[in-house]
Image 1: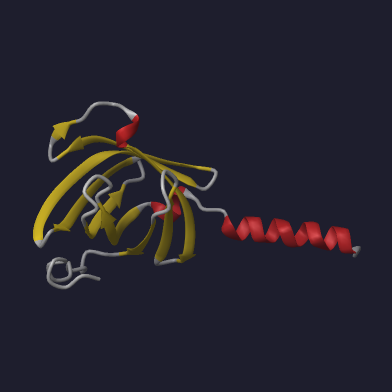
Image 2 (image 1 turned 60 degrees about the horizontal axis):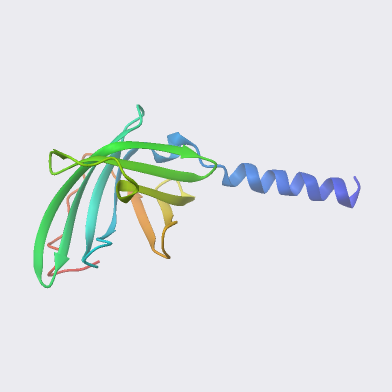
Length: 145
């Protein structure tokens, strides 16, 4: 086999191994959170459904105070970019503008972990696949992860 052909086979194998599918992202995930407006940090659980909808529950610690927030909307994956469109926050519809659209470059670490690289600024988030037995850790204001 020629070196050029071997190189093409290798590149194809690497691309195929890195190809992220919607099945890789569907399900329940636990990860870290960051409020882009206040800078508050915390954690979240997000459930991405096969029908392209999601629900996210976030706990944020801002100046020692814990706040809870729920977002829902739609998600899709195209060419390794996860796009989420939030349509409601805490049960209230939000305006349809770019403020509520997030784009992440996705990298699957293994069957239980993904890395999300936010495209609008240099923030990276790591998420772990969870199941029904998962229990939220202690208050992130007291015991940050």
